[in-house]
Image (cartoon, rainbow, N blue to C red; front, side):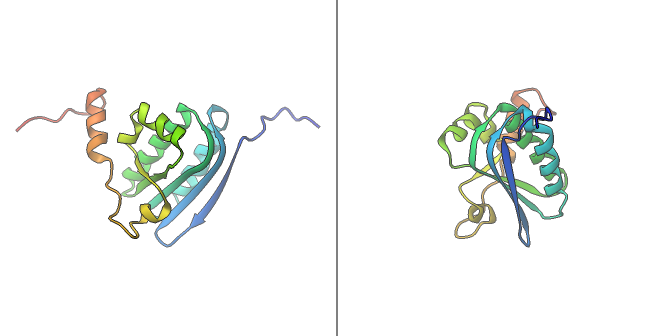
Length: 146
């Protein structure tokens, strides 16, 4: 029986660690799933862990709306004193984030271990690049020279 609902084009799994929440996404992330996925990511952010890791390794399509959602989550995590790390190893997703200059604003990592800083130095936050991008695009106050 067809109830008229749009079929869900993505799946989400949550892993809860002592200092992190990992959200593993699969499928297509676009405007049709924006609201549901935004609610799920907001719920993950509210679990009180300082690190939220969004794993895109099984995402087959990421629209710019989905990428923008990552920016929103990053802002919310930063405002709460936490941080967002995005696991992104797929070349087509890396290219999208690079072309949109979101690789300068988001902390991209190759794995959960890298996000946790295990086996290497912790990933550097994208704060400086984010500030540069915001100033260049007229968002927020420009830095004044001393």
